[in-house]
Amino acid sequence: MEKLDYKHPETGEELTYDTLVAMSDEMAFKAFFPVLTPDNWKKTIKSSNWDWKDMPYSLMVENNSGYSQDCHFCGNYQGHNSCPIPFTDEMNVLDMLHKVGVEDNTSFYQNKNGKSDFIVNLVWHTNLKKEF
Image (cartoon, rainbow, N blue to C red; front, side, top):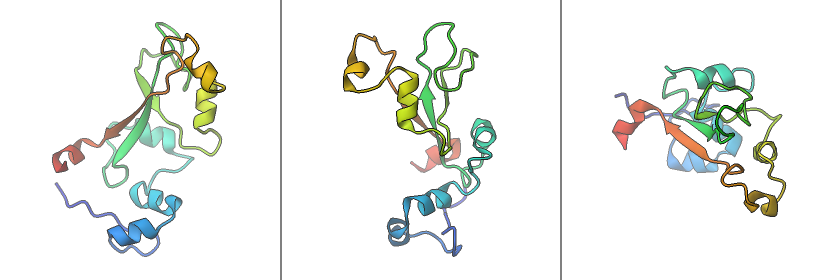
């Protein structure tokens, strides 16, 4: 496997610990996810052959909508277990919680038998597993 060498989005210099912690969250995101944008996230994340240099991991939310029901998050019924967390300014985690009926702590824990659970899976690129 190639060396894990991520670059600073503006200077192109190799990232070090010091330069990474000095960056804003947005700049650090661009360093690790240089091709991911609000316009192409659906296509990029759903691709089965993404490059670890473009996206070292993806975040997936589990579909807990129930047997033969459409997914709370993407609206599709494909018998899938998870779907990508949207990369968009139009939806945030609170919006996703509202989709499963969570308005506050009380509604999260009220006799829903896991139907309000918001489970996020971090899926590493297969080539990165060798490095851990």
